[in-house]
Length: 121
Image (cartoon, rainbow, N blue to C red; front, side):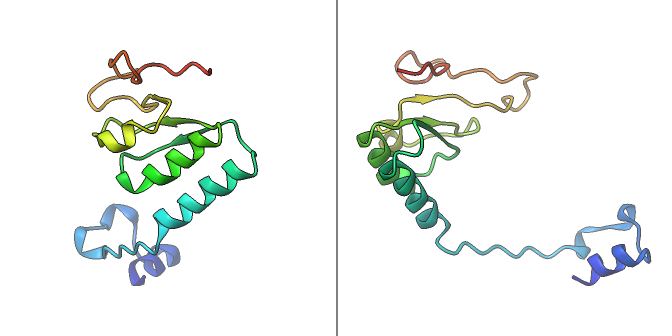
């Protein structure tokens, strides 16, 4: 916080920043639960036909399963990370939008089952 005040006041320039000027403060306060509730709400109210879930986390299996049971197409973007088989079972398609690290363009996965450029049903 002190560093931010110094930057704003002009007493420090961004190129003077070093590791010691930063403090890691990570808090996860039921974010997965809140996202799951949002997914359920969207599905039950039929507010969407399709949703894109950016994760590979098995915590979202129940939400993805529910959305699909309610007729929502669930597309997964794991950002080129691994996906659990449990989550993979409850999606309609998978594609990473951002480029694969070390590549200049985004492309779909190569698995012929679900890992392809998604086309709506």
